[in-house]
Length: 300
Image (tube, one colour):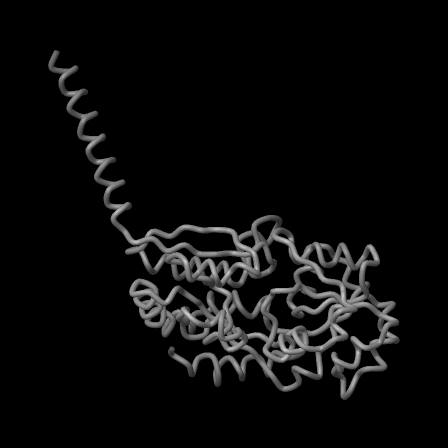
């Protein structure tokens, strides 16, 4: 009888403790972290799973913000910023201070100090497109506006996606963009572009060098493609960071993130997570100079 009573009391204590734990968790404010199926910012499968540059930084920050409940939610490029504005959400791969966003997308957001540094988009092209593309090169950079006038090759891009402020202007105003292949999707954004290019849907697409690096590491067919920097991006570089909804919670989160980043950005784990994907081969000296002089110099 005493043993049965003791078991009942123990069970009741466990139930109460579990209920208290749930209540404590539910009392925490929630941050919804938006992610894209876009490698190598987020990598969910294969040998590099969990090692995406935005994914790693996001996890580091979550571990240092235990006062919040952290949830993940998949999104798509065209809806990303409107989703942030309609819930307590953050995104770990936004342009720093929204510099490459139009006014409508930038409004209602708050931004962290920079968390990553990158060189802007270029062209990823099949080798057989090289002779035509070479005709539009100026000092090792492709004149993109001249190239898209050339009907001997066909390019591709993703409407609604945020590129750079220079390319966004071309995609919205240049009539020759109508001849380009337009593609949108939700999953396997990186792999799908290579598959469609291999199938002959287009000859090149606009994206970062890091997309080619990821493809080479996972597929191993690097000899089929080449990366071309663009004249429109010559001598330019980009910074990225965290964007959150401009609410009292969002502003509080960004304030705490900026304090954390002062030390976190100096750690090997943080810098290596970025440089592995975002530092182009042969430009190590330039990358680290920008990292120290531009990224680490900005605290908000």
